[in-house]
Length: 131
Image (tube, rainbow, N blue to C red):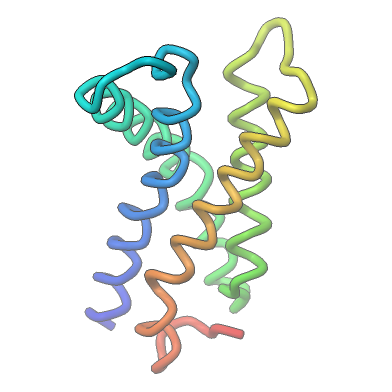
């Protein structure tokens, strides 16, 4: 049980890295930026991605865990939905363009897969069900 809890926390800590890195690399301000600027933006992107993981990822995990459905596809799906919701919410009250929602949804899906891969080995041995 302790191993499962540690890997779950590590998974939640690792998941925001990819969206944070995408934010840092794809921000127009980094087109001619130095390494310090990109790393600074990575920290900002990680922080906001971590907030999204707390709001959308943690409840999704507990729901799927309760249902016995912690799988790669549930991590991917909940990450895509959570990322898409973030893409929509950050553009309120005007609403987001569809490509922004898709881009954020894809980043969320990758974050979900990162979470799953970090937690996979500990869950495979008897924690929550993995298929």
